Length: 290
Image (cartoon, rainbow, N blue to C red; front, side):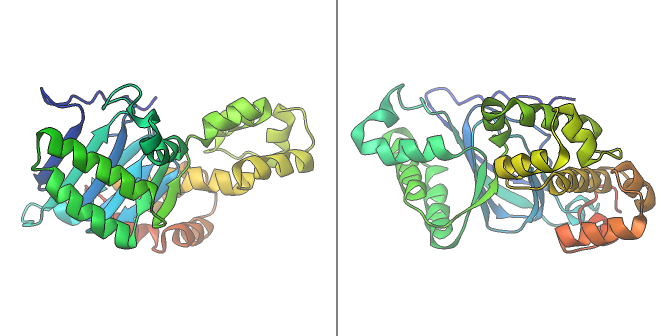
């Protein structure tokens, strides 16, 4: 099922969106949109899926997400308990590259910001001093209007474009880059996406692109910075995490339906990726826990 595109609507008299949310819990569906997005989770914890990145978030998490990058955020299970007194709070800024005018970011003074925006192909986590500075600016922009609001957006982007405190979380758009650079990679990725839950071998994938296994393995690693096995494991673990948070199927069944054929191997790999066992992961993040 394709990830749905989300149409963002700005308030009348505004050129970009700033949303301040306080709620009992957070559960955004899988979606993407053509706008850039800066997310600040002032309060709350849970799990986030952004592009090809899967990880947990805690209070204070800040992420900058590029255009058309799929994402999904959900609170920990404790926020869904009937007697919970917890809440989440977040500030989200969405803007397009032309929100301040079609050529605004092309003027000389905006060159660094323009370069930064064009370089964001996935998502990055904002950390350290930059996060502290932006947290203060976001607190200001949520209550600002008019020219002051625009000035704060430019200030936020200026801080981001000059920061060394950004950690790459996802480079999901590398798929489109690969499609332009090597059709063989596109064919392989498509085949993997359709069969990663079943037993597939390097030889079988290489055969689809009319190459021998060792040669194709080198090209795949060069283009994706991952081995084929690592890439498949990423997909399988992501699938298992979604099953653990959205269903109450037995862990053994999750194992087999996520492409693994040995429960102990699944548990070992899952813990290597997430630092916790599937059972602990489910207890922390599943909506179905009471």
